[in-house]
Image (cartoon, rainbow, N blue to C red; front, side, top):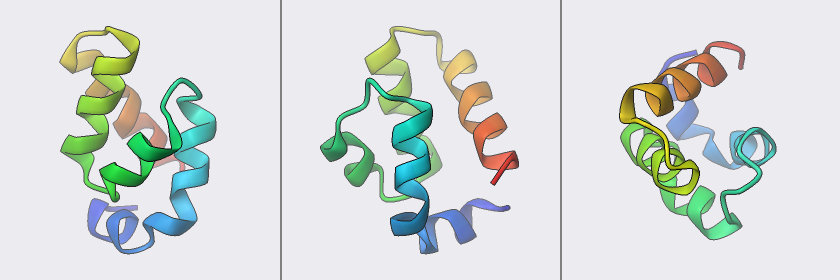
Length: 65
């Protein structure tokens, strides 16, 4: 699934994102609004991981949708 589709249907996918990254708050997931870079930044910040690792996690998650 591409990011245009994810962004357009974010209300459907945000629950799955919340499940995957349980430390993200509801507000953080909502603020991402399906934007890849925003979600990567929130995952990186909340989990204290390198940007590359956050990008890998987000891309892996998106590929399984």
